[in-house]
Length: 304
Image (tube, rainbow, N blue to C red; front, side):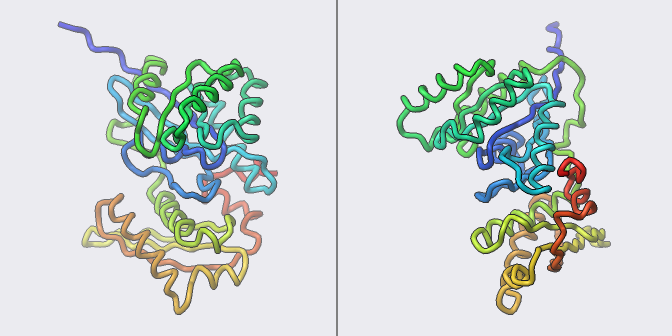
């Protein structure tokens, strides 16, 4: 009788500049949405765990905020969360947008990896967007010369190209040990916070041009109904009255559309009916409010 292969489990921190495709990759590998995706940069604010069962391994991906030069308290707290995720992980996977190339943000990340003596794996993402394959090979050679990477992969998180091979290799690199989460769990994100993230994603999708990055969503109430449905009440915090008007829209049309789209996605995720109620409040100083940071899973003191 053949002895079963030993189980493996571990944490993989996914690092990269804003819009490198980290959340898209984690969602693709998990096979479900556990982190929001938007063309707007820095949409992932705290560390999100996406859990993949790949027998005999359990891979726990830490989707981190995009690494960039922080200017505000919120920025600094996000960047601190990203580097904290890397420090605690068994493996570090750096994503670089192959179309954008080796830009300033990516160079800063590689420099910090060098300074910390941390080895990493590299995935050149969005290869489907690069027609010139020689350019891809030149980019890979340039980054290989940095002396930081143990392996380089070429993938497209959007199409899935190269992702099975990436998953196989990551699984082999994890330490032997028991699974760290139940086999049917795909994320550690509480449902209340996931619901807030889904609505925040719709804010970015529908108001990408009009609404600045400084909006947040909190789930204020979560009430289980007798018929198996759930009533969710959320507050959208903005910084100015003019932003509140944008979110509400003419005669409330915009917030109605936001709610419909968010509710539809929540019903798919939760697999039950959802009654979603959205409210908008102006809080000019929410980025300096300790409670708001706790609600979105960030350390207020790391932003100081």
